[in-house]
Each structure stands twice: as C-alpha cells, then as structure tokens.
Image 1 (cartoon, rainbow, N blue to C red):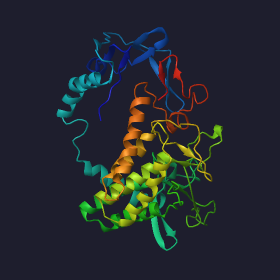
Image 2 (cartoon, rainbow, N blue to C red; image 1 turned 135 degrees about the vertical axis):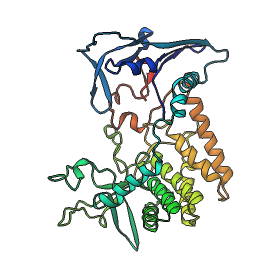
Image 3 (spheres, rainbow, N blue to C red; image 1 turned 45 degrees about the vertical axis):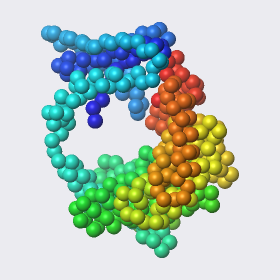
Image 4 (cartoon, rainbow, N blue to C red; image 1 turned 90 degrees about the vertical axis):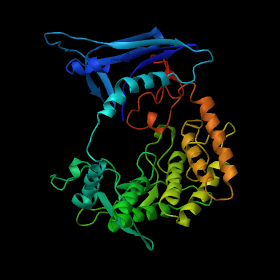
Length: 402
C-alpha cells in the first residue's frame, strides 16, 4: 500500500490540487505538517503544527510547536486544469502523480519490506492456532456438526501472561459481517493449508465454513451474521458456545430504533459473496451454491425502483428501515449478484440485470456527490454528526461525511 493526502477542489469545469512534497516532508520529521480545507471560505491551509488524537479517529491542532535551530522547509506541488465535459474523476490525475513521483520509486527499491510474506502468515497462524489457541479459537458442536472459528476480537489483556480478569469490551462472539468475516479469514487459512499440505489447518477452515452454513436461513433466504456465546460461564471462566444464539451486528442506529436483531443486507450479501467464492475457488461443495441461491432471491425481490438495495430490515416483518435506504452499501449486493451470475444457476441473467441496475444507481446518485455514507460513517468509531449531518453536506468541507 502507498497513500498520501492531497487537497482537491473543483467547480464542474476546472480542478485545482495541492500535493505535499513528501521528499521535503521526510527531511523534517520533528516538524509535523497538516492540511486543512474550508470550503465555505474557499480556502486551503497547509502548515506545520503539533497535533493530538481526539477520541478514536480524530485529530486536532494543539499549541507548543517548537522549531529547532536551523533550516525549516515546507513544499508542495500545485496543479490546475480545465475539463471540457464535466469532472468524472478529480482524483485520478493526483493519484497518478503521487504514484509516479513517490510510490513507484519506493516500490522498485523493495519497499515496504523484502521479508517473504509467508513469514507474516506463519507468525499470525502460529499465534492464533498455537501460542494463543485457547484464547483465539472456539470449537463446539452445533447440532450434529462440529464447527469452529476465531473469536471476534482479542486484546493484550487476553494474554496468558496478563493478570486479572479480561475486561468485557466485546461480548464473546463470532462474526460473518462486512468488517469481521470469519468465513473470509477461513478462506485464507484454507488456501495456505492446501498449499502447504497442513491437514489440521484445513480442517479448521472447513469447520468455519460449516459454522457459516449453519446460520439459519428464513424462508425468504435472509440469515443472521453474528453468533453470540451464552452468558453462562464454565468453572474455568469460559462462556458456553453450545448454548449460544444467532443475532447480527450491534453497529446500528439505535437512536432510530434499530437493534442488533435487525438484519443488515450489507452483511448478508458480503457473507453470501464469500460463500460463492469458496464454492468457485476452493471446493465445489454444492451446499454452498444452494445457500447462495436461496439468499439471492431476497435482494432481487426487495430492490428499490431506482436500483438500490435497502440496508436494515425488521427482524420479524422484514420491512426496510428508512435509514440508508438509498446508499452505497448497495455495491456489495451488486458484487455478490454479479459473481453468482457467473455460476450455473439458471437465473444468471436475472442476477446480472438486477446487479447492473444497482450499479447504475450508485454511479448516478452516489459517485457525483461523493455521498459515501454507510453504517460505519455514523454508527461506529466516529459517531459525530449522526443527527445533524446524515444525508447532508458538511458546510466546512463541502462534502458528505465519509
């Protein structure tokens, strides 16, 4: 990955861009640069200032910036250009410049690392399935089937060497959700196990596949995305998984009456996409294709007139919530339907037609205004603006919250 910030503005016929000179920036690590924009004043700001983190993902300038004796430089590139037929992609030229100027030379030097990627894989799997196995891995019976997966989150306080009881930051659970997908992680485990001939890891990957397939599908095809451990603990302090239950992600607009019992189409389409990819790329288990087909009819029947797919659905009536009713979350259902359309299901054309209609909705309604509002934008790590800015541009940046 290579990425660097820039300030870009346009008015429909012209674009101006300010790009920091990373080579100058690198020479002065003790003099931190910042970028700022005030669209209401039509002003870019590029300067040097100390900063602190605020909350989980925020930054703010603070006083006390000290300039050591000697030379201090600040540098940037500035570009302006006009377009004849409207701005389709104001970022493309800037991205190309950044890559050619800085990214490609670093990549050609072997950056960011010359260590074989297998070393990282071995370290991660050695941690999860050996050194911290009792903390990370959960294996249990679900009916007649043995299932297993990695827990949602573990932290340093979970370490075998950590004193005291683990804080209950997250309820013990296993997720197949847009962020945290045990099935996607297991597909990587399966690929590595197949390549290295590791039978034990392959068995664990397949147990996670079995867990995903055990998520109960309603007659309409929709299914839950999170498995919650029971609140009952064993004598050694471990929650019971056999007595657990299925639910959904708790990153929801609770202030609008939505709970984790509501279905989230983004999560179900993501999991269904992983199911299709497992079938196509790993093993032709026909149960996978049947599971995906049963679900596929669900978004098809609930596609909105413009082409969007809804976000949250009532746990009993399956009526869609008004929140994020027309959002870029549609894109994931589009991706799933296109992948399924390439399989021999007999309904490929219907899947493709619905997918392209959804794609057109995002292209027409979302991309031109940069309206990238999804569940994470307001109902996760950065909740500010959920009341005053949902569906509205922020005056200072001239953009929707992203």
